[in-house]
Length: 174
Image (cartoon, rainbow, N blue to C red; front, side, top):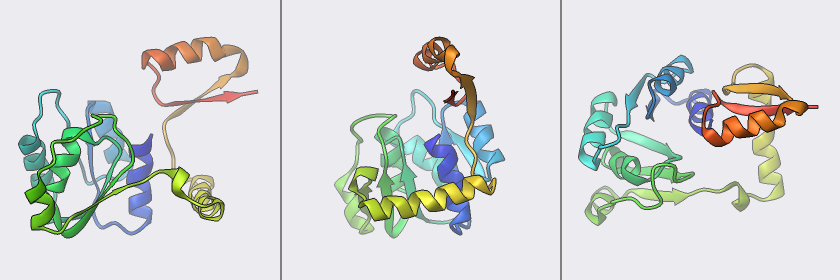
């Protein structure tokens, strides 16, 4: 869901072009439905060079900002397509807790890697951010795949979430 929200929020924030990366064809299709100019595949046997080549091909020039919820090989590849002074903001580690990042890649373009966590925000900053996001959601400009499940279906919903067979987030209704 982070990727779906990131595509939409980047466009709402004025991004000229958004490139998504996803493992499944359905996730890539959803990213494009939400406004990504292109969604490139992330393959199980990918290395940094192959992902960077696909990113470079999809971009129409150097990239200013990467929002990275996956880290690992995709983050190392994304660093290679950033413009001088570009930023990678890491939000998670779904593709790996470590990344094969080369010092020369960081230094040669004075790149910046930033770790982000909501826990680093003050109460006022968090409230302001949530107000913006909730406003976009209430206006229908921000959506994520979800399923509303009655509270008495929690057992089945939990089992499907644990098995990874849900099509999005599960929202329990009382």
